[in-house]
Image (cartoon, rainbow, N blue to C red; front, side, top):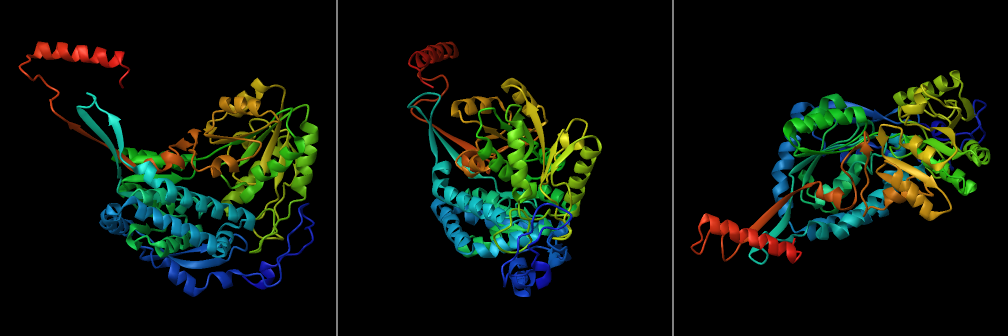
Length: 542
C-alpha cells in the first residue's frame, strides 16, 4: 500500500453523504506492518505444503503469501496436537490458567500490533478493532481467574447417603477442532480457544485465510505466554477443503459462521458422535418502545447497526420503533448516520471502515437495490464509496421495507438496517420473534422492569436493555449463544468452558454393597430398599 492509498481526503465524496476521516501524518501502511520478518515469524506454526495468500479490503492488494494445508497436512496437525495434549492436560489447572493471565498482559501491552493486523485484514475502523482486544482480554482474565473453580472436582450425594461417595470430574475432550470466521479474527479465534486450552485440550484451528495473520499473531503471543507450541496447531486453506478435514479428526468441534455451513459441520460431527458448538447467523431486532429516550436510542442504534460495518453476528438489522416516537427517532438516527466518518487508515478517528470482501459488497448492494426497486425508501446511505476503497459502502437506513424484499428476512451482514413501526408491545414482540434466527436483540425503555419483562418474551440467546450488544457479550461470566437457527451451545461462563470437557462420575461404595447382603434374600432386599426410598423422600434427601 502506498502513502497515497493509505491517506484519504477530508472532504466527502460527491457520491455519498458521509465524510472521510483523514489519516494523521506518518500513519503506518501495510508494508510497515506486514514485513517479511513478521510473515516468517507468524507462519512458522502453520502445517502446510502449498501456497496461498490473503489481501487487505482497504485496497485489495496482497498482504502476505501463506502456507496452504492439504488434507494430509490437517491429519499431521492433529497427530502433533494429540501427541502434545496429555502432557499439557497433566499440568495443574493453575499452571494452565497462569498462561492465560500472562497472555492478557501481553495483549494489552502490545495491542497496537494486533490492531494494525485486524484493520488490515478486515477493513475495520480502529475503535471497532479495539472491541476485539477488549473481548479477548476479558475472556483471558475471566478464565484465568475462574478456571480452577469451573473445573474442580464436585461432590454429589450418592444413591445411599454416607455409604456412596460420588465425585464429578471434568476431563478434557482431547483435541478441539476450531473453525473461525473472518469478521472477528482475534476474538472468534483465540477468544474461543482460551477456555479449551485452560481445560487441558489441544486445539487445531482453521482461521479464514483472509484474516489468518491475526490468528497467527495470537498463537505467537500465547506461546510467548507459556503455551507449548505443539498444543496449538493452525491449518489454512479453502473452507470446503480444509473445514471437513478438521471435523473429520476432532474430538470436539467449535464453529462460528453461517447457518448453512453450520448445518454441514453439525452433520459431520454427528456422524462421528463428537460434540459441537455452533454460533450461526442472526437477523437481530432492536425495539424502541414509546417511553424510550429517543436521543440515546438513536445514538445506540448507530453502534448497534454499524459497528464493524454491520459484519457482526449480533449487530442489529431490524429496527422496530413505536409509531408515537418513530418520526423523532428516524430524524435523529438519520442525522447521526449521515455524519459518520468513513476511513481506511491505521489510526483512530473513523466511525466505520470497509466491508471485508466482494461477496459482502454484492449482498449489501443487491439487498438495498432490490428494496428500493420494490418501494422502500432510502433514509441514508445506499451507495458504494470506491473513492475511499474498493469495498466501502455507506451506512444505510431503509424505511418502508416489506416482504418479500430479501433485506426483510435474509441476513445482510453489512451496514444496512430496516425501520418498521409498531403500535403495541404484543405486536412488536411477535414481529421480533417472527424469524428463524434467535441470536441477539435489544430493548430500549426508561422502565427497567418493563425492559426485563419484554426481554423475557424474546426468543434470542442474549437481550440487551438500552444498548445494542456489548453488555451481554462483554459479561463473560454469563453464557452467550443462539436459539433456533442461530446455533447450538454457548460461549462464555461455565457453559463456555465445560463444553470442552467430558463429565466423569466416580462413585465409591463403602461398607455394604448395593445388593442383597447380611443374609437377605431378594425379596427382603427389595422390601428394605423400598423402605429406604420412602425414608429418603421423607427426609428430603436428593
